[in-house]
Image: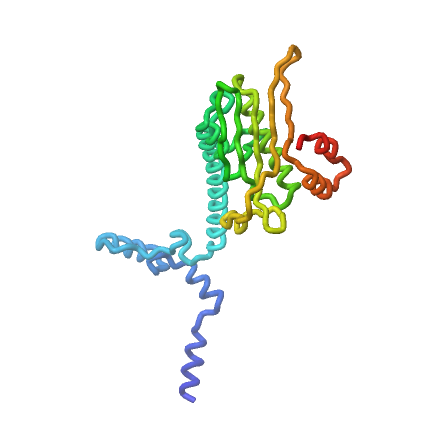
Length: 267
């Protein structure tokens, strides 16, 4: 009975939850509610060189009631910083790529052509990249001729290879033919074929290269001629046999197809 009486007496003088919260809200980093005692405590700690315990989030909020605001502010700052970093990296990467890529309209030799195939060339609003596997057969301003060979390892079928190679050959040839000393650009395209004659491509983000035999797929021959009416660029596609033409026709499903172009190409 005496024990229960003591407990009741203690509970009678206990603070409610709201009272406790109000009390601790007035406690500063020194642990005092009285401003004068808090000032003396700060001075004493400063004289002894002792640090003052401050809430890690904010010294003005020792009770931690502004944690959500601090976290939100930190998140916003991080997102803005990350976006700014991405934009800066894109600008720097574009500048470095342009500065390291040869301008074939000004200078053509084996080194500059290899640099263009490795780094890409400007086309439209961006850059056109080329397959990693390539070779420069000829690049000579004296003969006015450029001839290169690439091996496509990213296309899944004949239609993808034809479409992608056409864009790459066009970008490469037009950039080269803008050089007044170049009038012919030959762009050979090779692929890897498996034992069933299907095109193989790289796997695992390009780390696993295809192992099938390398076979000629098609060749784009671009020429430049000058006349009284201006400069004419023309393209001839060679190396397309009947089987490849049939495969491309089967894979094209649009109402407008390049059947006439393929039928008129040279084998």
